[in-house]
Amino acid sequence: MNDLKATFHKYQALGNDMIVIDPAHFTTPLDPSIIQLLCDRHFGIGADGICFGPLQNADLPHEMRFFNPDGTEAQKSGNGMRVFARYLWDAAYVSEHEFPLSIHGEISQAKILEASAAQIATSMGRLSFNSKDIPLVGEAREVVGEKIQIGDQGWHITAVSVGNPHCVIFTEDLAQIHTAGPHLETAIQFPERTNVQMVHVLDDHNIQISIWERGAGHTLASGTSACATAGAALRHGFCRSPITVFMEGGKATVTIDESWQASLAGEVMPLYRGTLLPDFLNAISTPN
Image (cartoon, rainbow, N blue to C red; front, side, top):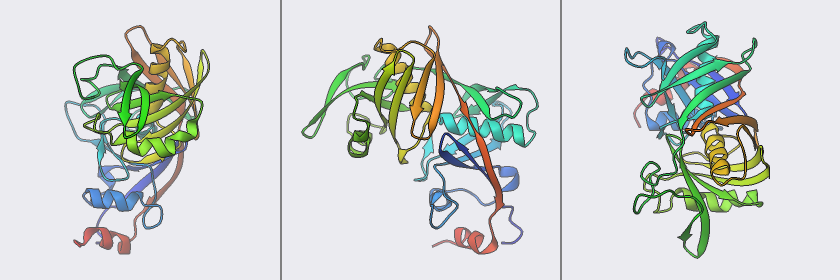
């Protein structure tokens, strides 16, 4: 296995630590079991997810895929996109301060906001509250402050699609995320599961949130969660754009225009580069 390429890069964005695997420098095929092991904090590298790319695709620029630590593939990751944008910059795949990247067939624009490339913004697409876009069971409708029942607990939720599903609850008790998150993520009302956020409105331009990510559990930050919660706060009339979203891992700024197109800006930091060693490569390359 010594002839295998096995270089990886590690970044963090607002406390979301992510592995970047460039297929040009990593030849072991990724499957769910390998992804789980790489993300494991005791038996692997440890991460909140894997950014895989750039992929060779003539139709999509700088294409990436994002994998959750449980091995499932995400439709979108806001912090993952910003981490990937920073990697494209660091690895000299791009030289302009504004450039496109793509995930799950959708093209976004990335922007390096300062000379050090510590602050990066990405366009996040159009927010939708329509149940068919999220998806949520039942007839087509906007899901804004709707009550759902899970066991003996009722919740007033606002559901948002940012290219992936979100369930937003306004409350001052953000610690509820630890008990409510697992139940809401897998509620039958969400056929594709959902990300969950508890939101406390601070004022008309600032909110504080806690996050339960689909496929990852409690997490310190999430770019799509920041966009979803900012959009929900705007839709309810609690806030005005731009909105600063305070998360356990740091803060991000979400800007939403009149057509509900969102952009996300925040810090990204490179941590280290490494190479997987032969014993580990043998372990992940040998069938059980």
